[in-house]
Image (tube, rainbow, N blue to C red; front, side, top):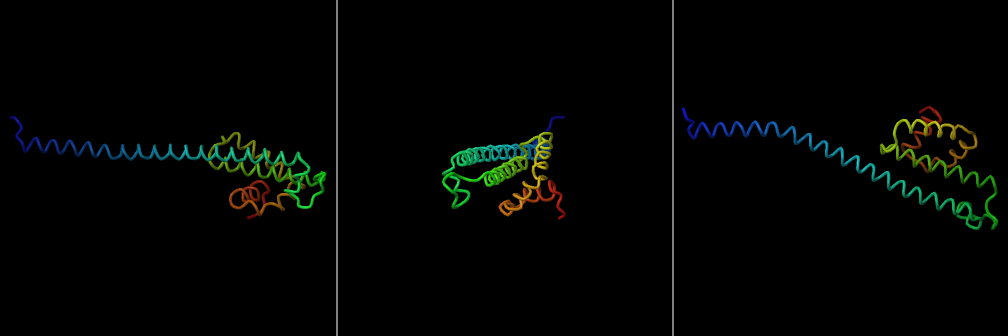
Length: 161
């Protein structure tokens, strides 16, 4: 028996409902994948921006350290012949702490593989374990708020919370 208009309309509506019911979860999945890709791209872009800033900053700091007449930027009132050896070491320690903070931030963005991160963490632990470096950390840690400071204090130095 051939289908009449009411039967055909009902079958079409049922088919449309099934297609929509199947399509909604698929669309939600596609949306979730798109958001994940956007987040990964954003994190990678942030890591690149941080890297660019850090490289420019490190280059500037090294240039200042190499020119004794510019050492007054770090230590006001320094003599024209530049910083004494101990002060240069303090500046370098501060630069290394800044570098470690940068590495930590890039790791937080998911841009450092875990096997590399464990090696970097070991290097940081060795650095912060030395008394002279720990002393410098105590002098500058107020400039490092949030997660990096907590990481150094709790994970590297094992200071009780």
